[in-house]
Amino acid sequence: MILLEKYDHRIPTWDSAKLINRSCPFCGCIEYKNVYIRPDQLSVVLCNSCNTHYVSPAPNEQALDDFYKSYYGNHAKKLEI
Image (cartoon, rainbow, N blue to C red; front, side, top):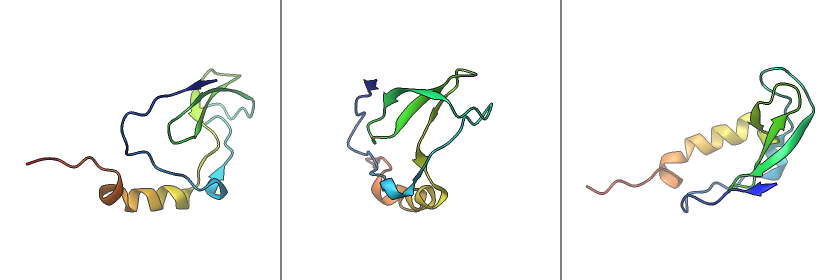
């Protein structure tokens, strides 16, 4: 498995209790191979059936909602004027 490098310091931390396993979003297959670990520690997997890359387990709806509600305060790049 390949560990992807950080782009910058704005990496979210996900609560593992709010992660859900997913099947392939395109074909529905539940079998996959782990390929990458993102800087936020989420796994990018490769579907065994259709070769689609996707994140699994992924943040659930509540975790994503919380992330986007706080995005501009915690993660958006600050522009210098």
